Image (cartoon, rainbow, N blue to C red; front, side):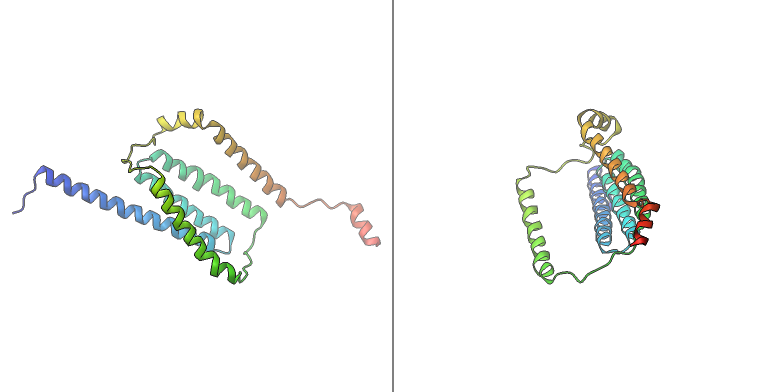
Amino acid sequence: MLRFGISEYRVLSTNFMLSVHLILFLAFGTVAVAGAINLLAQTHPINSALSLIAVMAALAGEYLLLGAEFVAAVQVIVYAGAIMVLFVFTIMLLNAGVEERTKGSRVAVLIGIPGMLLGSILVACVVLQHSGTEAVAVGALPGSPKTIGPLLFHEFLLPFEITSILILIAIMGAVVLASKPPTSPAGSLARKGN
């Protein structure tokens, strides 16, 4: 019969938790990347908006894994909920149809895609080598409402308000773009006379 002591049990439970966290991290990351690729590949704007909701939900799962439950809840409520309702409302208000696709440029495909990959790898290498960051324990960063509230409404109040004003301007712009200019009877009579 095999017996484990307390120290062996702790090692086994720690390894199991690390593997579960890794599996969940990879699953949420895969959903986020697949949703982002689908967002770009879709031709209909509503389908793109639904893909963006999947990306935001996967990010909320990543925040849960990091121990930031409040940030995950805000991600779902504010972004996947309210902001996406505004996006869908704007898409429907503008009566956006299926996007027209072109073949694209061969130069962009032959030079652009490898260039983007090379540039991304270079930026990642520089950031990882010179960022000065280290591994952070789960729950070490502020994630509870008690710590985020003062940060949001004291230190980051101006960016928070600027973001809300930008969203309001975007909604007003969508309404202006969607509204049709009124046709005047005098203008239509003048055109008929010519």
